[in-house]
Amino acid sequence: MLAPWLLLAARPAAAPEAPAAAGPGRLALARLHYDGGGDWYANPSALANLIRAIAERTALPIERGEATVRLTDSALFDFPFLHATGHGEMRLTETEVRRLREYLLRGGFLHVDDNYGLDESFRREIARVFPDRPLTEVPHAHPIYHLVYEFPEGVPKIHEHDGKPAKGYGIFIGNRLAVYYTYSADLGNGWEDVGTYPDPPALHEQALRMGINLFTYAVTSRVTP
Image 1: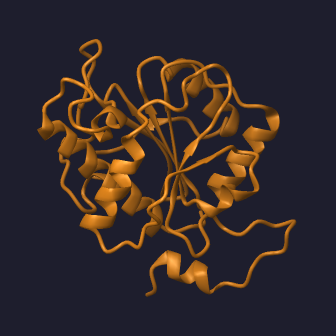
Image 2 (image 1 turned 90 degrees about the vertical axis):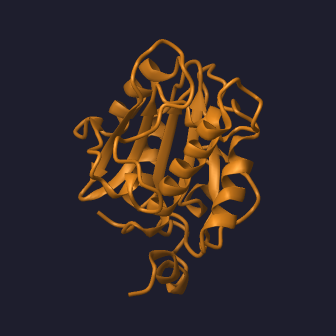
């Protein structure tokens, strides 16, 4: 069977009023620019390092450039993987709520990494997107922890804030994990340049490995519920 991104690339372009499934013909990731006061731009070197690791360690033809996208941008559906982070408030408009729901239902993948302070507002906003699909802890047996690198204990703890264990929560659409939320893990800190934080290089490596698992799952899982 062809990989999902090859199947998508072979499909005819959708009419303007019906956007194609997320990421048609492209393997790219984007940082989500949201409003509300949170620093959506946190961890500035993180995605460039993650993209480099994916390109060098897998056969996935990922695009090297880092992009930033809003939920209202026409380019939203070009990206099979969205990453959001920050320390403060996230607030979505009704239009953004509808767009994010559509993006996820059409096969997109959202990774949100709480950078300490985003938890309350993200949980509130994602409940608006899927009021009938609560965040639940992702089982450690899920492929996201085993697809490329092994994480038998779940998401690794990268940066310490308050002694809480790292947790990985998700929202499933059918059998597909569509939203993955890392709490008290700080993967984004680990993706940053070594030395940015006083965390050991071994944790930087663990963070990159987990990020590779995330992206690989996002672009190889089925694109429709």
